Length: 268
Image (cartoon, rainbow, N blue to C red):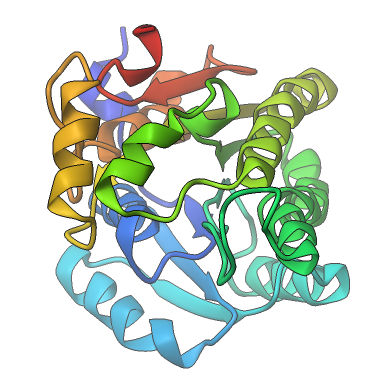
């Protein structure tokens, strides 16, 4: 019988986490590295992640690699995946974390810049599909793999704009909800497509996480609407979910959207 803590180990595995220089992407990198995985960090600006990659390698004793690409460009994504596979021989885990928030313009759809809408969909949804397409050919060859797509509770519930307005915060754009809803739906269909090849595809939908940059009033209002009474904690609350879905402990889970939101989405 396998021991559950052994099933959570990722020794010898290669994990690519997109957009991983900070915040939730960085937390996921730390979780996978702590479990023994070699780490590939990506960014549109390679210089921004090189020092972080060195820190990860030193802290957890794993190999790290950095690659630069804009995931809206399929040729660039494909070239990066080839480079990673050539270096490590495999891509075992892909975490599609890179994405964007509200952009520079007004969040309200009626006032929002049209190009920001297009860019939101491209970076959050099209880019995720491009990364999956480029990585899957290697996973199919080895008849195994784990793909984790970062969705959001924005993809499963509507937003109370009053919370944003009371706190003087730019509201969440509708196009963000559309993109993340697409990520969740694509995850389910990808799981159906890739299951015969031994590849598990799941999504994690975080609720609000307090990065320390939010208005105090917004954190207060959000926490009051969350059953557990708080926002998500950076450095803690996303790690277990990511490790479960990336490891052998999650081998019988596919097509699932794991909501990590303190219960926010269950209350009306």
